[in-house]
Amino acid sequence: MSPTMSNTQQGPFSVNSGEDLTGKEGYLVELATTSGVTTASLPNSNDDIAVFVVEDGGASGEQTVVRPIYSNSQVRVKAKGTGNAGAKLVNAAVSTAADKGKLRVLPSTAGDYRVVAVALESFVDGQLVLVNPVSLGVITVS
Image (cartoon, rainbow, N blue to C red; front, top):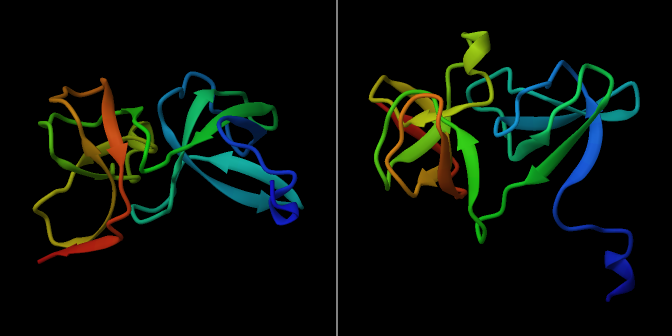
């Protein structure tokens, strides 16, 4: 291994919960630094870069296990609404607290959306849908 790649790790790791993530397995979170400590929190904006999936959620200030999502590996993420295989998925509307961290089909409503994944199966609301993470950046719907 290259010396510049020392002290790195693949797969899940633990961070402090920036909010209560108990029962949020399968939800996407973003990382931030709060008072010098790395924390995981649900996205606060529809275009936040939430690219870590909760594997074992903890209460606020406790440890949460998260896994980075990679384009070369599938993951299951909590779905908002229904959709079909091949659908481009974006962050669900964060204005509804219960939907923060879920993915939904790219809406037809005008706006800027960050495509996070593509559905690999048809899904219903609340399902842990199998997805392949992608990095399509921000798509503008007009």
